[in-house]
Length: 588
Image 1: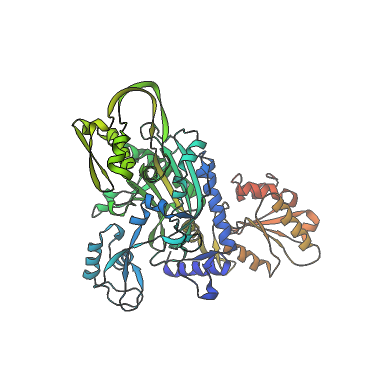
Image 2 (image 1 turned 120 degrees about the vertical axis):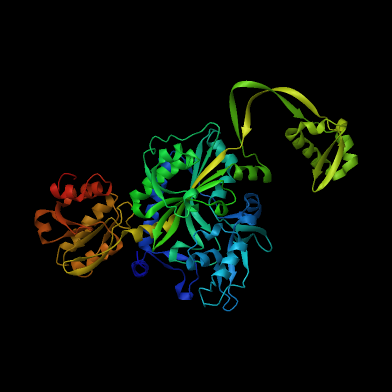
């Protein structure tokens, strides 16, 4: 799509109520957009389609967690320390920019996010890169890390520090102990969530592509890496376009097509779970209207992976000449649950039952508190805990006359005779394990934009230029427009009755009697309404209405009593317009 066409799409989106900048009457604020009536409908349809495919069809559970959580959650998750982007500030106009975006926009370098800051500063100097706002050179400006978290206070006064969540995932992870109970501690199990997330972007841009408040649809799949593998039979033969690290690092490397099964067999995709979700996501994206010729999966380079991910593949689509991330498929390992297990007061494990009981040697301690108490006072309890942890990790540490532990940065030497150290044989029926996690994380707003851009069409009908959106019925904001041909007696009433009957049948319908019929058709074409139903003078006599197809503008007469069934068949993919035209009464 050309830059001119992109501008046309953004103008259409604003004019027809898909999306527009928030609080425009007050000057607006960068990075915040409102979805209008048409856009909110598309967004809702996308969310429901995602829910059907990744929650209902996969047999997972769904939760809805708060968007604000206390600071310790994000200390444990690592977001306070590592959730950063590279910032460079112009000395002349004071504008702040993503340094990696400045590099990517004005050089041939791709994925600059993975490059260390000192190298980014050197690239800015070598290429004499300038401020995108005022053109001042940025060569002498430092590149710094900027944390993207939105901070808030929970409660009055100084309150309790908290943050708006930067991802919905932590709302799932912190509740794992209870969620695992609901799943009867049976792995694998998945939990999904659709909700808002917040990132204080340095330089929001490209309308709803990069914003500060957005909707995510995320799935956290908890599994035992030693036992649980997905069934790949349904996706093994699915063709996907991959751009792995090896190709990105080659001078002439390019994305290539393969199948999910081949990618797993050859080791290109290391995790079968990632491969499984890449397969079903590719099919799902295509079903919603994403152009497969402008779609690929790109593997993250080592320097751009999130702090929690050992591997990650992005679903990317081409928008306005740029490749844009739509979703991330991350192998998070046991990072998140281990961190919350370490920082919280709860246990983030599941009990794994053995097939047969096992007799094992286990090192234990029973510290002599009558010695530790007088000797160490308030530190005695922490020292006892440290002795217990050390016995589990390294029993050889207790082989001498004394053992050394560290508490709050201080080392303490404890006589072994006062530790109660012993090695015992115990019979175990199972063990507590920390599950691993694979996470498909989808951006909803970016997908809405993608569907609009990939569906944007211009043609000529009856000598008149037409703009229309070739949206799939599953995501179109309205399924059918119902019109009276004129406002003559009887026609508006009949048209309203038809609209009411279609709504009662569960179809999304709009009624319009304003302007000539051609103008009404154009209005519906422009917002992507797949079909229009017009009642005319003949309808009062023969009880039939004209159904018009958006893409071809072809028309067919269908008995009014058969309209709900016929249109439902078109919506559900049980009939095509050509089949309806061949037999208008076949789907009533």
